[in-house]
Length: 184
Image (cartoon, one colour):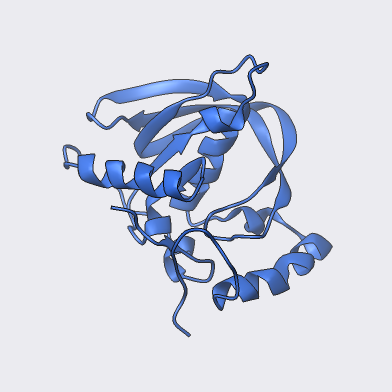
C-alpha cells in the first residue's frame, strides 16, 4: 500500500514519535513505507510522514551516491533508533523533504554518527555511519524527534522560505505523489 505523505503544517510532524513495543509485527508497515518512499522518489521516509506517530524510518542511501563514491549506501529499516553520538567534520548539503516539496536548504550536519536501533527482525544493532548515509539517517531521525530540516534555518534564510512553507501547508504545491494537507 502506498500511503499519502503528510504535508508541512500537520501537527504530527512536530511531535516526538512514540517507541514501538519490542516484538511488534512491523513487516507490512515497513514494506508499505518502502513502497511509499520509492513511489515518491525519496531516499528516506519516517513513520510520522505517513501519519504514524511511531519511532520507525526507512532509508535508501544508495540513491544518493555516484559510481565513483567510496561509500556504498544502504537500504534499511530503523526501529526505535537512538543516535548515541555525532562527530567528525561538519559539512553542508542541500536537503529537501517529501513533506515539504519545492523547499530546499543548505543544512550543516556532522559527517559521522553512531546509532543503536532494532532491525526489522528485532535484532538490536549498534553501527557507525558516515557521509550521505549518516546525513539521511540524521534527517529521518529528526522526524522522530519532531524536528524538520527547515527548523535549522535562522534569520533571513528562514524568512525566505516562510511563504513557500505556507503554500505547502495550504496544498498549493504540485507533486507526483499523494499528499495530505493540514485541516485549517
